[in-house]
View 1 (cartoon, helix red, strand yellow):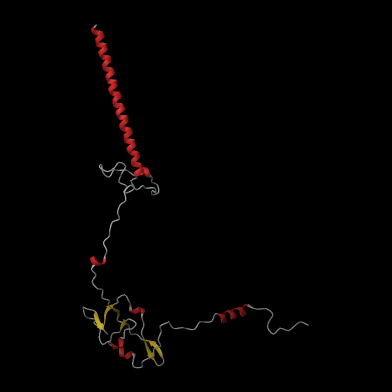
View 2: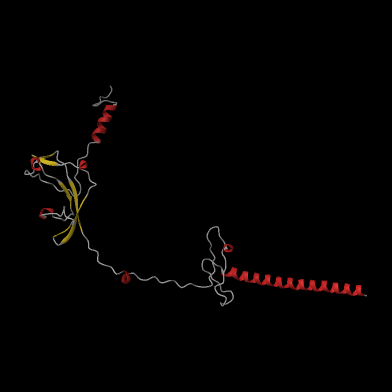
Length: 230
């Protein structure tokens, strides 16, 4: 005899959907971190806003706006002193009234009203920056002493020692001492000096040879003239 089952032997799709719906229940609302419970004030009613403007004022955290009697909104100087601290108030024209809505207490709840926020202001603390004498604070830069007779061993990519020219610092300086600023190589300057010596020696040899050839030609001409005279 087959065993009796308390539930159906096969699971239907509807049962799976009901289980998933129970698991994915809507999470409960949690207020923000710095949220404070606000008790509705029955004295505030929509009729109180007739022929009046509503300002939204943002103030620092420890600013007790209830003790503030007036604000320099229409004055040229927007700075003021409150509790021995300097503040300034600025109008924020970027905020639009369409982004905000006003809710007023109605029994134990809040309900939106048709009134709009006219202007937006923000209060910020003024920090006085003392005068700074830059001549006393800033330390003048001292140039690093340049070392002579340095040899450049590492060159930028695509360049070598042949790409840098060598120039002597002064004619009165010792032989082999060159200006190594901007990658001028000492070793290459020595090679150039030896090359210049070779060139001068070749030139002197050539001059001597030319003089000898001229002398030989002259001697030959003299001999020919003597023979013709005879």
